Amino acid sequence: MKIKYLLILLIFSCSTGKLKRVNVEGYQYSSTIFKYFLPDLPLWANFSQAAQCQRNFRGKVFDFKRLEMDTSFDYKELVQFQYLYNIEYNRLLQSLGDDSPSVKEEEKLFYNVLANIRTGIYAFNPPKYKVVNIIWIDPYLEDRKDFLRMIDSDALIKGHPVFVSLCLSHQEVVDLIKKNDLQNKDIRILSFEAFSLYGVSQESQKAMKFDFSQFFEKNQKLILYNPKEFVPNEFFGDFEKVK
Image 1 (tube, rainbow, N blue to C red):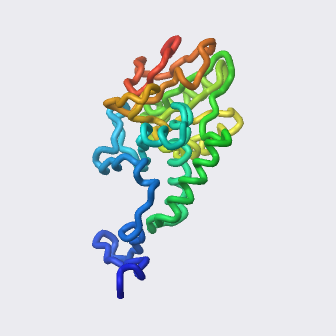
Image 2 (image 1 turned 90 degrees about the vertical axis):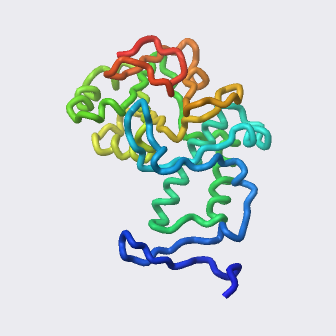
Image 3 (image 1 turned 30 degrees about the vertical axis):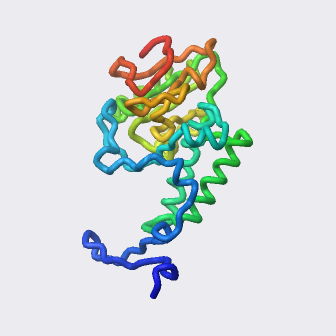
């Protein structure tokens, strides 16, 4: 059988002893969308040095320079594109189970996200409150008691809360919020999928960063909650204080 007619291969998985479907459309078809992707991180490198954690989900990282050239998106829109794409990509992977998405599925996802960003549908909507509590949740998750103390403190009351994670995916943070019955707190989420290798001027950076100054107004007070009392290198912006 010629490969152009072969859509799915069955291979033996030594780890599970089961047959696993592998989609091979990508071997014979090419798509213009893949020029916007930077190479995937290997599994061992999908690690946060600041948080000292191995991530479960490998997000897609985009070449902002190429994407900006063809879409005319500004920095905020590029970040929102990457963030929303990864959220939807993760959902797609979960819906497929052990299967890999086809090229057509990834193309459909890409253009759906593109349309959303063009119409102002974003994954992260910054709160407009005067005081915003940027809560780096990873250190709090090292000890369940620390996390419970944090959510019972003024972190979720005196200022609009934003949960930021360098370890957990967006969906994992959503699950954490549900598990702790925090849905009524209107907690905004910034997970590692929103962090980029590019700065606002499209300069390349040595590490994945998020520029808070581009998403919040100058008159807003950003309070960073981190029990270790330092600002991670991945966080770029002006924080009034660290608590």
